[in-house]
Length: 405
Ligand code: AMP
Ligand code: MG
Image (cartoon, rainbow, N blue to C red; front, side):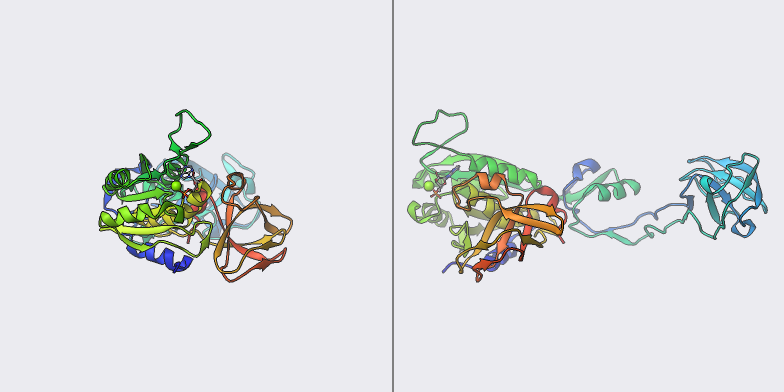
């Protein structure tokens, strides 16, 4: 009995343990997952400061047309002096600490920009254009959760706290093995019987894109000895991904040899299209993903099953891409029974996002994958979809990963 898409995904995620953590220099943490929650060791801003270039004033002295005596200047990085006397103003630059007595900043453009005396044009309220100490981030507040993906904003925050290094979850070393007697490696001579092993490359690129370290084991031939050697090697890494050799025509050789190696199989067929002959197994903490050989099926099953698993292994909290509703620009149809992953091109139209099929959905057609920027997830029980119907979609590519909730 094939496993449903949802069950297959939960079975996988239930088996994936996070790897240990390591400390890396701040910039190396980009795209990685924070190992432990972070509470603010400092408050931000660290001192009251001006949000504008202008004059530090006492708001009670200020009315439209009033003239104040300018008694000094505070540059960014300067000390918060002199204090603002009654009836006075201190020139101040953005980011400079506010001086004693000041309870508002008047931007230059709301004055005549006078050097010795300054005339104010409009009303001034207490607190105007002051960034108060701790208003952004309070001391001790929980600013990042364990498993937060470190993007430029998180790295900015860590830098503001003075962190030169950060503890993140280790990268997964992921073994990649292609199987098949017809395969040759890139660069080897071609003839009419051979197929270039492109799957190892798409898988390695996908692993790398999400922060893992691919280890390409090359090609195992369609015989027990070759598979035994390569699969045992693959089981030495954090995870193993194989392609091909799991469909009916391959006599389930990959599954037989995995069995021989003491690898426990959790499922080996999923109610999806493409990618039905996908198997998931594990030996201790090492997950094994046996993906179908068709290059398009390999990429789609990686996207749907392996990607969330590797992200979870590398400590990320958000591992599933959010599904967004996008309207079909033209009707679509499928057979009821299996979840279908339709390769689509999403674009923005006058009424928001819209999508069209990116071409022939046959798994042999790579061009449809090249033109796709998203996958529409069509529910198992449905068959016909009318033009205009909004359907669940997730975007392809690394940026979308970080939108995950
Ligand atoms: P299989 O799953 O072994 O039946 O393979 C399905 C299709 O995918 C066949 O056309 C294979 O030649 C092709 N294929 C299998 N492995 C690879 C690979 N590593 N790179 C490119 N194509 C492959
Ligand atoms: Mg084969």
